[in-house]
Image (cartoon, rainbow, N blue to C red; front, side):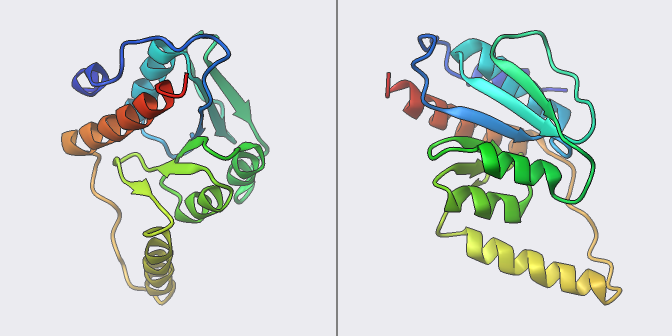
Length: 172
């Protein structure tokens, strides 16, 4: 998958068991495999808990730091589960803008698989663009889909993940 370069950017130090303040929640239904692999390696390397949430079974490696929660099928069921469980300071990996907005409102952090951090400053604009594109699609205009995940996207994701993990490690 070409994720080896991005994984090399992740911190090598271990965080003492039980000390880590950060939990990572993954909106796993649409999360690219290469991003999951980066997260799995980050969990093993840092000892941070990574939990994938989806309404379909997701393969995860055996690890005390990686878990999976399967929710019922249905619109926004996985998103609602993540919002219910996320705590202030936690990180959510998602490309779902309304989910990111809910996470930020709860004091969490949101990072999309392309490496863009959602913030209180940019989330409202992202929601407006999303709603506009949804309106276009609803009126029959083909807006196309997002481009494939590039090496640059993977690197941006790994870089921002690294920054967040290093910041968290400083809280030991």
